[in-house]
Length: 142
Image (cartoon, rainbow, N blue to C red; front, side, top):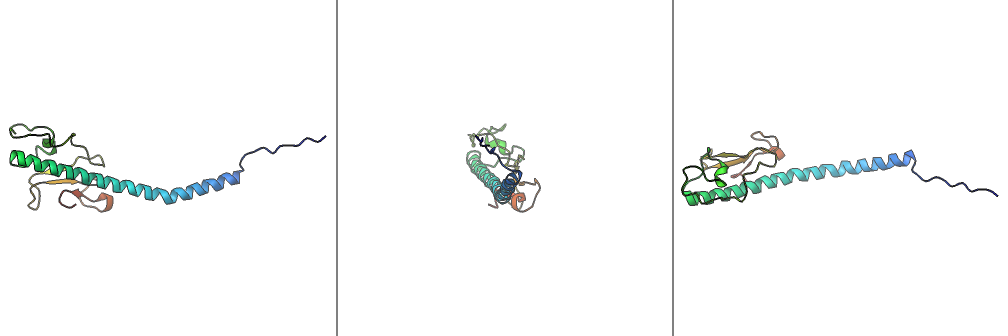
């Protein structure tokens, strides 16, 4: 009586290489689109935070009669500055966060070019100017 030999299951090296190549091609097409969305999300998040700061500053001004100073900064929206008896905050629910690129927002009061104040995130590169993800995000240019 002859014994049947069973073929042992598994993948050949060629089959594994084909699968790896296919996965690599898929990753090459999907990854740039995915990471591009992350950058857009960070920009939208910074714009939303700056908009919330704008609203808080407007309320601060209504209560106190003036904008926070550069020295007081955005923290004046969350914690009462010294010698500010008309402050009725906090004007934000949480402490001032860092921008989506982990840098502090820049607040100047008075601002440049005749603006009462300005709030700036310098984007991904952390430098003034730039384009795309590196572009500045401001309260006046949205």
